[in-house]
Image: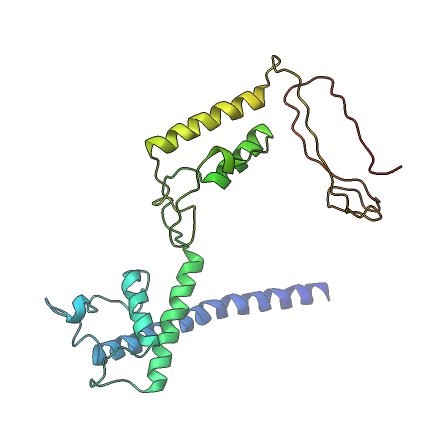
Length: 248
């Protein structure tokens, strides 16, 4: 019985192994047939004008290979936009029917999306300086210091609605000087200065503050009243903390 089951399992495995190449070959043949059909569509409606030494609108489609959409990616993307909006072929020229339009658009979209997943290309990272927010985050992670960058550095230039584009984040002599001044203040705060004289810092609370419930996120769950204050102690030492009640 065991021998029979083993032979049956081997037979099933061999049958699957024999069917896999057939399925792969069929998929390849189907893809090749689709690519050839779409190439014929381009040849019939597009390449006549977009070929030769002086192609229409400077767009030459003669070298496009419908079986390999990885090459000439920018051209495929441009053509896809034109086909979606039915701008190509132009009005007055022979045009394919709606089904042919949809089939060609879907083929290009599917293949380009597949290539984007298999071979992602996010582009080349441009070397650029940190913006104010990135600079503050770097100081926090490296030195455990929370700094107010708005007081130390000017606002960053904005391009296309973003303030972290490398081409926009230039470094002027004045900005470099501000960064050096900021670095001096931050380094002194990180190292500490034991020659600092004593100072007082008061944190007043609004008299209308409700003290019957948890008033802020830093407070523990279930806490009633009180307040949460973030204070930077410049050096190790002994500090006097006094609390004055509003009533009682």
